[in-house]
Image 1 (cartoon, one colour):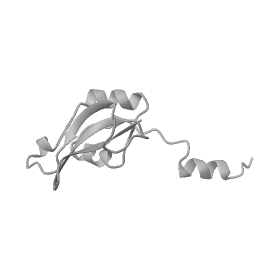
Image 2: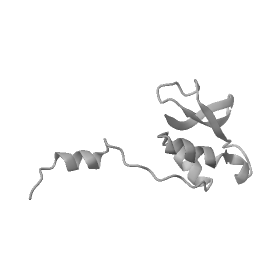
Image 3: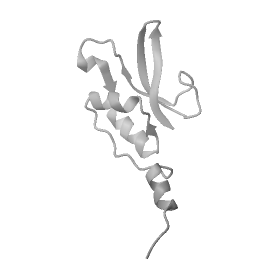
Length: 103
């Protein structure tokens, strides 16, 4: 599961919904729940991002990952983000596993 943006709006006036979706579904396809919305064209900073932070934390605790596009939007809106768990496949973990153990 991923927390990502779903594009809405007309041509040249894009706005986005922040949704929880299966990682295999298309960008504007099926989703599980809408967590909020992001309007980059809004004049007021408070109207740009609206997020239900309780549901955001719930889905992160259930294993959903925040996409690379959503993370800076949430940081700019000063939404407290949950701690990121390191991936088992990260480059640091691969390098540590490949290095020979010396005693």
